[in-house]
Image (cartoon, rainbow, N blue to C red; front, side, top):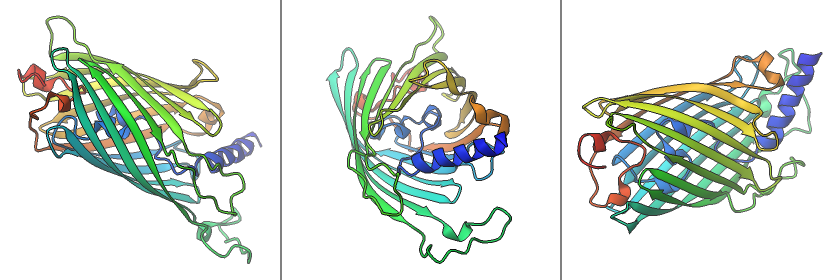
Length: 333
């Protein structure tokens, strides 16, 4: 009975909050892909960077969320970049799909002290659908209800805006996502109309003295939803080790908690990745630290990617803070 109660609670929570037409943010951004967090990162770093993610949440629970996404950003001028991301999210009998088009412009505040400021904007197209053809009575037989006559689909267009400040190896970004209210449909009575959420991401990269082949990166990611002020915080840490060719591997961990339950973990888990000759692979595992933990084996995420057309921009404002490999090779990226 307890398992059934928890499963019903799971469905209620994911039904009410899973329909917000947002790209789910787990730890994709930690796979050396800060573009997940903000459009302001478009064009920073290697000329063309592509990352694809596959995420399976709460393995062991029937109809638990499953997500696939792809990200690509590209520098189009010495001070500008564009990007595109797309996702497909499945949660029980609900489906969400979305595409995001981004543009960023990067400025030099002070070249000597390496201070840079970036602005970004994204246009989002999202869709939500309930697949009524998959409804059943729990025993495999379909539900026959003449009042259910369509797939209950709805679409939404929205915008994100943000800025990014960098000072040497310190970075801070802030975004306002989905700042337009969502169009509602009569078939969902509890669906929030306000999708606005705020995200802040900050961190610092440093190396031990006399060892430029190693770097450490602590970071914090904060997200708050305007509709009900619920919020969460990720506390992260990464260790990278480079070789003389600029390839590297990294290991790290992430600790997420709800801010009204300070330091009581919601998700916690390790992660690791490797970059070799422009090809990238990373794996992350998270354990859900609540009553559902007894009925699932955690959340698994795989990231694969490739960096193409590597080249140093004429403007220092597009040299990435996420890597030290060019600095280690003497190009002071």
